[in-house]
Image (cartoon, rainbow, N blue to C red; front, top):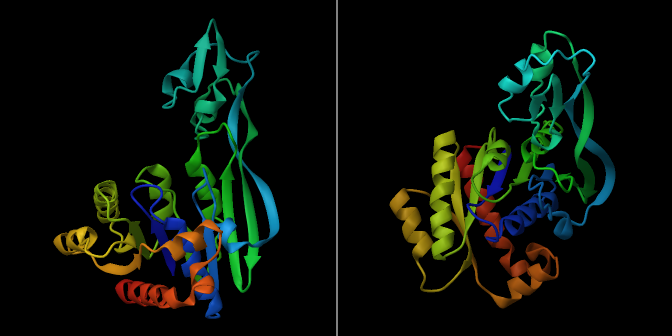
Length: 282
């Protein structure tokens, strides 16, 4: 079963929910993998504290021009959707930072003047936490291609057990790449105007992709029914509610897991897990 934990905006508690849910499954003796797909700012490891056992660079193939063979026909530069190639005075140049490694230019060059080389765009990490497996990918500083980094991570997911994906924030391409193929999406929000506004976008994204989803309200405030009313209006299940309490914030700020440091809140994640299983039909 693949469960993505996502949010319409950053700072709602997405990583907080994902890490506690993964730790709960590990404590229950289930086979679980936590994958941090927020490749621009991965931070799940701060809470899970895995023992790292593997790492390797993530690369893409970028074009290399042999200008001794290039005739300046401009076929490659005129067909590049990302404007990563330019031909000037019968010579072609590559803007690697704009290249999406589609390989089209290499295939259409009539002179065979375009080769390739590997460019490092990130790093893959794998570790263990108790009975659980941890996976993470991090973009190299200065690169802008989050999607191929996430795809590299997803290609290495185990085929068995429960998979928890800590998604990037928002509703852009990296999020879509992360949640595609998941059995269920947990949307984490907060009872603020910005939280509700971005939750609407996340709900629309899940519906467009045809994915099953539900909502977790984090930092719930007594007397504030904003999230509950939204879920009722949109016919979306409110899976769980986590209160705005100082002791929870202090636990999180120390980089600790709520279900272990404050076991009185453990049942909320048990309830969340049961609701997800029920909603997804697993």
